[in-house]
Length: 120
Image (cartoon, rainbow, N blue to C red):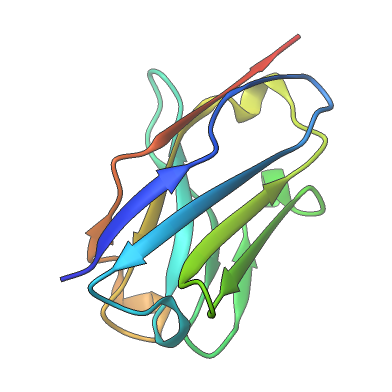
């Protein structure tokens, strides 16, 4: 049973940058699909970026070229580097991981989220 704890969320201005981090215990990011999701007020949760256990990456169109997902296998953490932030990036960001190395099987473990607010 993996436990995931996100950190790094804060308030930033439009155009700013931020790094989110997710620490895992009870499991290893390196061998499973893991990713970042977000949910804005009044909206459904959406996938932001995922990385399979084989290293395959996938990004939402809205963040391509601005966000980068990475695994730090030495520290067993998952990062999300965000740049050129826009107000529409404001959301609760969640870290998630699967039991499988493949992302098509869905996520099984979720963190409690970290809030990112982007102001004008």
